Amino acid sequence: MKTTRYFEEQVLPRRPYIQRLWCEQAIRDPIHREIQPDGRIRHWIFIEDLGKYLRVVTLEDGETVLNAFPDRNFKGP
Image 1 (cartoon, one colour):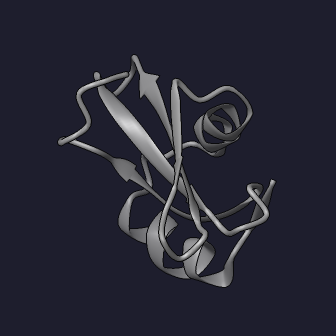
Image 2 (cartoon, helix red, strand yellow):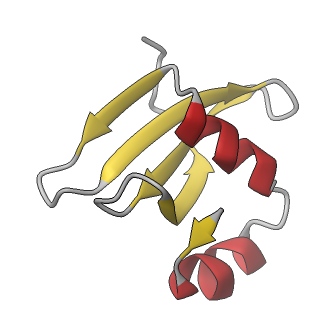
């Protein structure tokens, strides 16, 4: 999985519970995907262990992870 420096140095230390496997699954098989106005792509997946939806934001290439966090506002597809 490709990641940005921001993801490695800022996101993972703040959210150590986030598993890389979850990010890979969200990119590979999201339940919902949308493109932001800046071209970045949002991918959502439900994570049983969290009991929440995880939003994974990638760069425009759709595979380099920029950010990942539990999305409390996402209600599902």
